[in-house]
Length: 378
Ligand SMILES: [Zn+2]
Ligand SMILES: [Zn+2]
Image 1: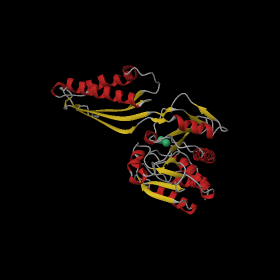
Image 2: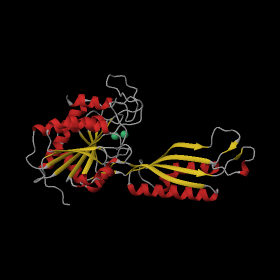
Image 3: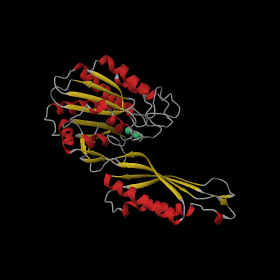
Image 4: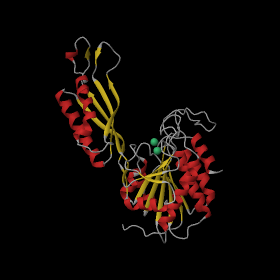
């Protein structure tokens, strides 16, 4: 089976974050005949690491891809469409896995004489949990890579182009759930209860003002209200419960902290003012993915004959690969997926197969370059 067939098989059998058992098993089945030096399973949950070389001399390079799909119903009708109701690969992680499988095929034929290459198939990227879980894993902690790299396909950009920058390449984001609780009353006598309605009215405008309140200079620092729930369709009842779901986004981690502080302070202030109980929780927390200058230089040098574009702006979306670049010299780059390709997370999105060859070629060039330079000081 070639890597395009592997991609289609993975596409057909998508699994949600932290449940990628079948996906991991399919990868192990595909990669075992390539006889890497080690295959380690169960990393940070369902993660798989495939190692070439013993690392006795030379650098250790880690390439990382993601295992998980999304809770989106696929609207494509091709024969390899998802067979799992309500779940599909709409971020192209099937393609990213196939790219690393193609890299594994290359190093199965071109065995390393020095250095070590680790291909990490990471679980639960979409929820922001997977990278942290992998890095808490005792076995993964022994990898100690000198360099870490990842790519993400980027629809709406020319096919095969590399998009890269030093500093933030993917923004920080955080889902915030605000709950306000008062007391129900008859709708004819709302004054006998305590409705959170006024507090909701007062809170909502805050989210638009947030970038201004922290004096942010970045176009990528903003809040998106993704849901508001207040009471029920029950015309005799003044409500007691409200929930607001808001996604905070920022180019820099320090700005995210300030956004969170302002939201927390305002919720507490309004809860006291209106005598409401409150809770504030966070989900899907992603730090910014910050690229190291030295790693970006490696990419631009290794891919000097390829269409590399230094982009001034980060991608507005988030990636948990930032957990790796916090610890190790590394970078994530965007891989243009074509101007006409549907956007990531669209129900009709599908990973362009031609990028499997392109992405693996880029990764091999970057890996080879790393083996030929001095590792960074640690
Ligand atoms: Zn995604
Ligand atoms: Zn993704």
